[in-house]
Length: 42
Picture 1 (cartoon, helix red, strand yellow):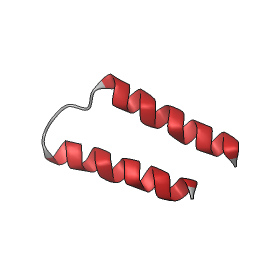
Picture 2 (picture 1 turned 30 degrees about the horizontal axis):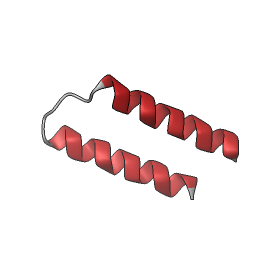
Picture 3 (picture 1 turned 135 degrees about the vertical axis):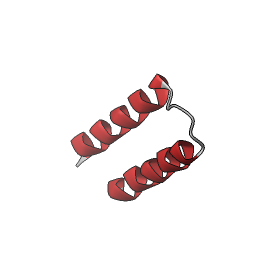
Picture 4 (picture 1 turned 120 degrees about the vertical axis):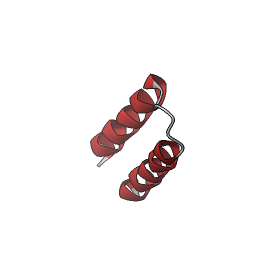
């Protein structure tokens, strides 16, 4: 399930990159925390 979540985040970031908009710092922090949390959950 955690892998599906990270996949959704990656797809979301890819969509933002396609819009040629720089990724805000808070999004990167958010995704990083989520991925770390899911890894600890496993």
